Image: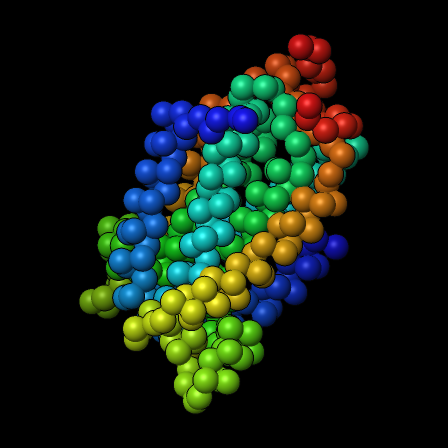
Length: 154
Length: 173
């Protein structure tokens, strides 16, 4: 059901991204989608595990938390300072120029339609920004577990 | 009477939140879409609440070793709602303009023709518009967070030592 809901939300979201006026904002919003999907699925799995087994690893919770904060920060950055993402894209995916062209294709991403190859490039460019801090934080929180118990904290 | 004690860590959190707020408020005027500056301003209150609540929750978990599940759910759903609001502002700005006009804009419509709430931040704004905008944007973030926190009441999360290896049960401490 989670997958169906995610696909349904995607069908509503992705066409809307082509109407966003600024290139870096389009790249940021689209590039964050794989991480958002991963976090939503992981959250559902964790909640189910917490309900079934009564405990989860702290690192899983921290991955979810820091990943979510990273997505929020990226969404804010592409909203109020899109030029910051533009600089990042310039030095990563912007370096790849197709043979016979003078400008990187990534700047045309989402204009009119979404090219699957460019979509993949955008996702590969943006996802490490979100995954790396989450992984580092999860690694730092290893060795502990969160256990669900009944009753309020005294 | 219980005295309010502000720790150095708490003070540092407040300073960090104010610094981030000032940065966001100065940068939001350059935002490309029309309702975006207003919505970002309106969401700042809830962002501050979530940031402060997250800091106290982590501190509580570290100090006492346990925390109420409702606090965690409030943070989780509040954060999700915040991300959702930013996505919706970009992907369906007209929807947000209509929402603002039919909530905070109702008061303004009684005063005369205008669209100041939707274009908040682009032109100068009065105090009453600031309060209305804060209330209008806070509600879609606060309500799901409160509902999730209410649904998760009566449980708590305890921090226990134990390996992450599958199949191994943690120690009871």
